[in-house]
Image 1 (cartoon, helix red, strand yellow):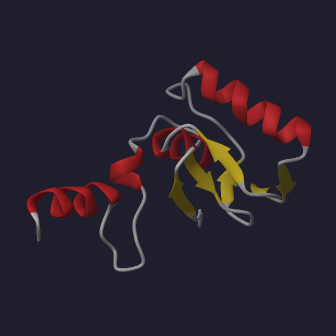
Image 2 (image 1 turned 90 degrees about the horizontal axis):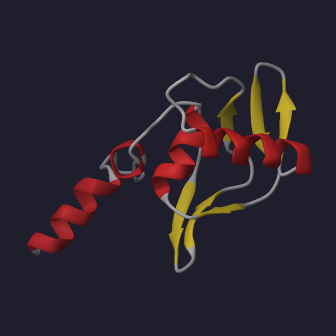
Length: 100
């Protein structure tokens, strides 16, 4: 899956065009499975062969919610999302706090 997102003042934005898993595992929290189902029903995500595609930018409350909805399984957002340089959000946050 290739997905892009960005931190915003309101939460985390899953960007239009991001790919999402069509299936969910049992580890995804029910609340997130329901959010994903609602996004599909409302047309914010659309079926595209073996995957789903975000049809619009989607605002979620956290990077972890976005990561789990993309992967279809429970995920840590700070450890799942990576910048273009390959560093995770967690690494970037840790470096920022340590002054590197």
